[in-house]
Image (cartoon, rainbow, N blue to C red; front, top):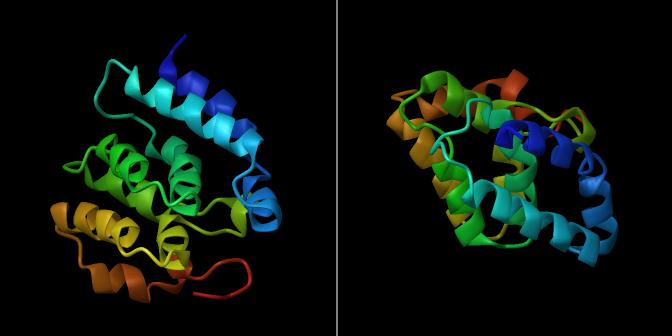
Length: 146
């Protein structure tokens, strides 16, 4: 099977991850999913994934698990020279996760590395980070919080 199709299938099981993690932390179910996702991404033939939004749930779990190495690896699967791919990964909101995006997930962490990975991606495509951070359509979640 195509690795991206496997990612889509695996991501369907993470729809309730935000609520589950908020209530229970990283439990064995999420930990197992995390391990399977690492294996899948490591074994991909292509360096970059054509639909970077498929990586967003993995980034969320990596941030919540404080797994800097996995988060860095996920970010490495986004083509940092492709403006559209970077913007999709960084700014696409996930409805099942309070309409939040990777910037929100990184902001919740006490560890600055996660936000650093995102800022580095944005810097590579020569987009003004300030414009992204001031764009309410990107930065506000479903509760109108930034």
